Image (tube, rainbow, N blue to C red; front, side):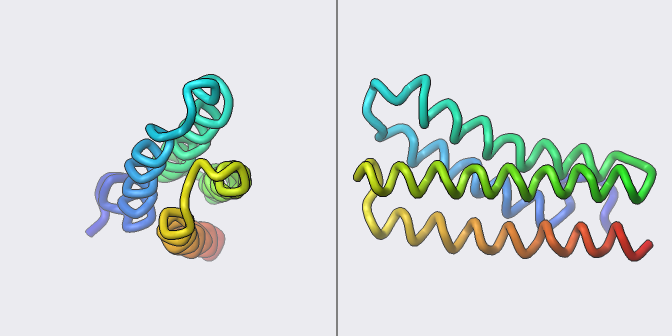
Length: 119
């Protein structure tokens, strides 16, 4: 039974994505500390934060709104990782690992949105 936001599979997978992005961004050049590093980390943390906040909301509309914001933060993060890949800050294997994780999180967030809309 789901009693806390940490019980949500979507939050758990998004948390793994947080850890992955922090690991990935550690290797970015120093000049990116206040650019892509900061933006990517803020976006990925926003995903888990919005899932948590949506879980805590009582109305369907509020829940869906926060889950939608989580999804848009994921889209923002995907863009930032593409930029990092194109600047050769990350290799193909790391990019593929990120893409698999991001796609899983996207599907789980969509499930949260559908679930909140159906109630």
